[in-house]
Amino acid sequence: QSCMCFFWSPDGSKLLFMTSPAADAKLYQKTRGMRLRCRWNVYDLATGSTTCYAKFSPSQTFLEDYLPKFDQYSRAMTLWAPSSDAFCFSGSVRVYDRKKGYAEEYEGAFVQ
Image (cartoon, rainbow, N blue to C red):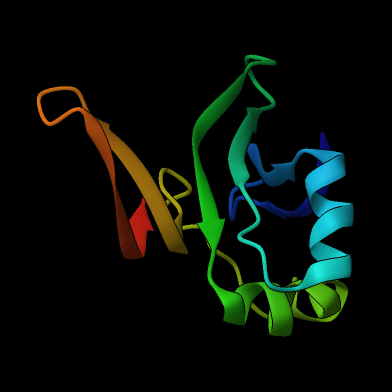
């Protein structure tokens, strides 16, 4: 896994970081057309545990405009709620519906 970017929570107790399989990240840099599959993870300093969230595809704006300049933007904005108990991101999430027998993709802003 490659760590693509990270954000400290406002209270400094958690670290939010986005990962992607290293091969996918390298392939995305070459093709720019594929949908990069990523995962948000939260490391809790107090417990030492990491929570992994569902895979998602970041929005094109995030991938093309924000991620390449992450070091510049990371101090000016955060995905965390001020209370440090949730974060928000944009992209698409694929959800498998067992009753229907196929996956549906949802695009928008998501809160975890």
